Image (cartoon, rainbow, N blue to C red):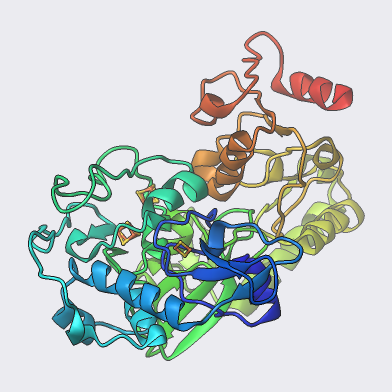
Length: 432
Ligand code: SF4
Ligand code: SF4
Ligand code: FES
């Protein structure tokens, strides 16, 4: 119903708290409630719009005195366990609870219920290298738990107990465990009760630049926050086809390499066994000379070229063309077929190896992984899609002599111990 209303009324037809663009509807906060009647001016029922299906002949009232009272009461109850003074001072753009308070016109100072027991003394957990949790600001919306389960598939977080008597921390358990620092929980949390060391959501920037991650071949889109000409934080846009509001640890947090003092800033040419800094003109001249030598000599067949899976298809195409036509060798390969980035995953991919591009799994396909790839290490965005496919009941086949982490989710895991992986993979693709 909420998606229907967004399509027809606008992006913000009713306030929401537990809903998030890349999570399944959950229906826990109820601030999205609407009145629904099955005939005009007929009796109405109150339904949470985010997880109720829309039906033919429904009369939906998004705003009425009854709904206003209900929403104010819900928010008032939430605020009985929230530091209202802190809420007034926080970054209001990033705090969705504050935004909802504003949207429904609730006066933060008018909470009628006595405070009683609260969780506001819960200490901060800063033990994790990237994630920070301050559960005194938690509103028990479950978005972090669902993000960890549904988006990353890591199942690290959980909720324990109910109400004020629930043991603290009542929300996510400690980050020690299988946490892979993907930041999905931090991006999902509406109040920054879970955030990251960069405060990626709250950090103000001069400019937000849409970019594509350069680490692996999945092609995750990024929103890069730039302040004083420096990257200060990265978030994942929800409208990106390839990653839909998610990235791995590398894409989201490992961004300091771009201005690291040890970063190579000039080409290096090996002279007398030493790598010596050179200008780009010197480097290009050197490359041209060396290629000319190779082409003229009898050795081109012994001069292979390896292109990168991080390049677009067009560049990979040019690379092979250059080697075949100019250098005169068919010894050309791409790291797309080794564990670096895109591994062959469908029969189609086996014929057309892909470089860096946006992609999303076709619906309803079996998913193959093979050739000694470990997407949890080298392309976590892909691995996340594999786990999601597994949860959706699709068939995941992992072909690897090792028992990789992904093999835990596979329906079939032929180990290929006695047969080359490629033979196994080719066989599975030609018979599927
Ligand atoms: S950072 Fe990722 S893996 Fe770790 S708890 Fe959050 S969602 Fe789960
Ligand atoms: S930590 Fe944040 S996302 Fe998780 S339940 Fe609390 S408020 Fe919701
Ligand atoms: S947004 Fe619908 S119940 Fe929370």
